[in-house]
Picture: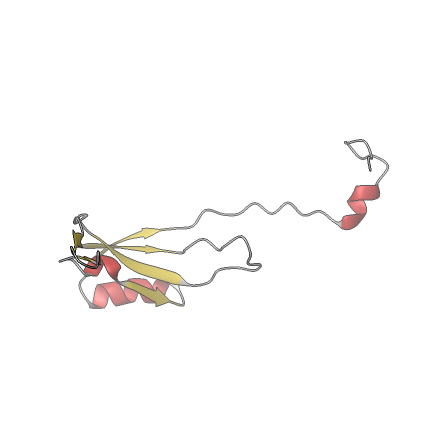
Length: 100
């Protein structure tokens, strides 16, 4: 079974950088078993539920190598920062017309 090592994207309500990395098992999708009376779901493959959190990519890779886990590393996309200050709203060479 292969594992995916990736850095999850941060939520829209967060500011700052997301520094944690996850190791998540990727296997074949198994159809869940639905219990009749209470409609609880269960599965025979519990490794799909395992997510291990690491502080760095290197520690996640070393953990996978020590435990003989086949893994794929997915590097995050670089975010483009559009630096803009509040005073740009009042500049004379503003591209959009000033409206209220």
